[in-house]
Image (cartoon, rainbow, N blue to C red):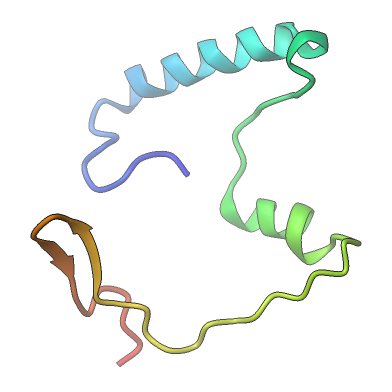
Length: 83
């Protein structure tokens, strides 16, 4: 996942840098043994998780998962809460 709150305020510059990185890696597929591209979360789930044949089972978390700590004294509470 790319970014967080306020991280993409200069998204043109951010994505230009990612594009250059992706172009470099994709131009040297043999060396890096990979191909990189942008993908949406639902596309990732459909392609790599939900339709995989790896026989893994994934549980669905249905309760709240917050509060979380994201800094030494920073907490989020109630964000994305189902209540």
